[in-house]
Image: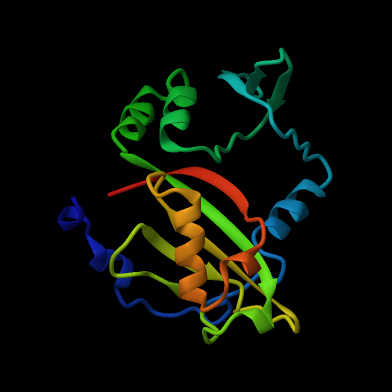
Length: 193
């Protein structure tokens, strides 16, 4: 339950280090960070690859994939949902795996749009959190202004139909549903309280 969440930890006042940016925006989004990492010498990127197992070796770690490939590395990082990470870390660290299994998750559907700026009547914003309804939140790309387009991503549970979300998105943005075009779709599993 949310009442058990210690939000004061997040909002505790701390001495600010001036050499560390207080906030930042990646002009091309988080994907640009991934692209920079992928271009780093010695880094190999494999997309659409299912990892079967992870094991310790004398040199670090060994990762086996569903297609039979084997990778070795000094370091190992996980960018997966808690349940997948729990499964993969079980042989490496059973205690960590047990703690990860306790994390509850939710499926969140995201619909993203890039639309002509002239078609949107709502003022520029960074994010919206509706007080009620099937839309959990809307994040915009308005923090990185563009001369002719605006971008938005609406996050919902899986329950509302896509048509419902499109109609609500158009209503929130103050535009015609048809002007939204075809959304980019994504479903993620995220930790939930």
